Image 1: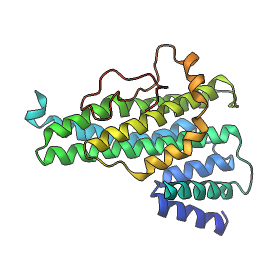
Image 2 (image 1 turned 30 degrees about the horizontal axis):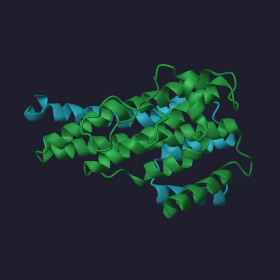
Image 3 (image 1 turned 180 degrees about the vertical axis):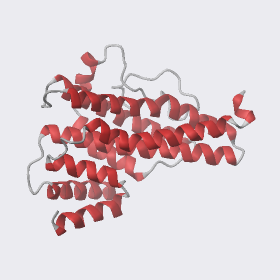
Amino acid sequence: MSPVAQFAIELIKLIMAVAPEVIDAIAAIKSGNNNGTPLHKQVQAILDPALKDLEDANEIFKAFPEQAK
Amino acid sequence: MKFAAAVVALTLSACSIFGGGQPVTPAAQARISLVVLASAESAIIRTCATNIRNYAANGNTETAQKIVNVCNKYVVPVAYGIEAVAQDVDAATELSSGDTTYNKLTCVAYSAVQNFTATAKALNAMGVPVPQEVTDAVDFVGGFASNAEKACDPLNPNGSVPQKPASNSAPTPSPAAAPGESM
């Protein structure tokens, strides 16, 4: 990867605070080298940790007696 | 919004660098849009989780419950919609403008943008700020999905696309509006 491209990636990370896996996925698609990684795997890598986080939060919230009514 | 537009412009410029100046094909644009949507969706989900924890921990279970309602009913389905269409894209022999999978992807993108906007308003009404990343994604994907409203109709005769809250301020959203309804 060229220094310019590397700089652009770092700049985007800095400004958008985008997760590295998102940058990597976009770069792979753009370069046409994503054949080895299915799109749904890329998407799952982004979404599944967040869904797990929400699931955990819901479980914690369920432990509060007031909301269970 | 000017800042968001600048960020999107910068991103697009940088994306062109990634490919060494190669033009972005419709298929690549569609795939990138789906990744951007997934990123924004992830940001909304994490916002939900953080605020559910915080409001519950502070004893404001009523607000926490409202956030749970909105997020579980309207945010989570978008995530599964994105994952499902990503699988369709992988299974498709090709992805070109106008074919069924492409239309389905743009339809999901359109619905997600509608949902993001409405959900952000609903969460904001509860005092929950939504990350700038979500606004950026709406700007980024909105143009791509702007013509998808018509494509959604034949693909979703039963309204199976993720739906949005019917009211910006309703704590427990009533049955959702049609995906194409203006906000």
